[in-house]
Length: 169
Image (cartoon, rainbow, N blue to C red; front, side, top):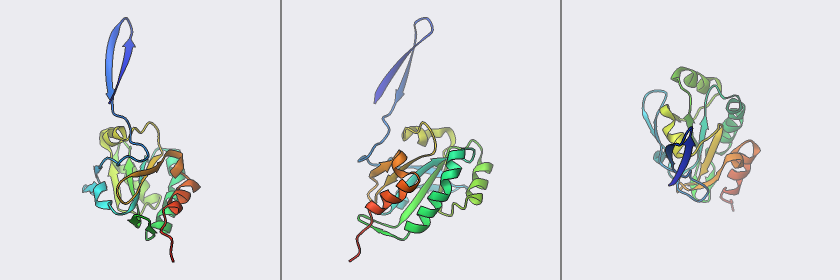
């Protein structure tokens, strides 16, 4: 854990403790959020699959522009066999402040996967060190982070997934 010290004004001291965000090779922290239907959605239920943990919001223009690419990747790889995973799933983490626009955006953008979570208060985003959105992490079947950030946006998402595909004989 890092301790950051900031001097404010005339010698006042404020201490902020932040955890180090996970990086490539780390185990992804478990996530448990509430779905649009009010049910608990656990990342751990997706163990054994390649998973894109996608931080986004309905009000985020770049996020909404990236959604068609994420939908395309989901449709292309969801039944694929990977080196240590079977199938590809997406765990969407919403940083919206209100549920209604989030739920409407899921429908409008055709985000057909089942794992959508509402990160009320931003606790999960803080745990992952998310400073801007869209941000994403790709984890393998064992829950290890194998790529993140720009490595999993646009065409790069497809390139990363292709790297882990099981070669057919």
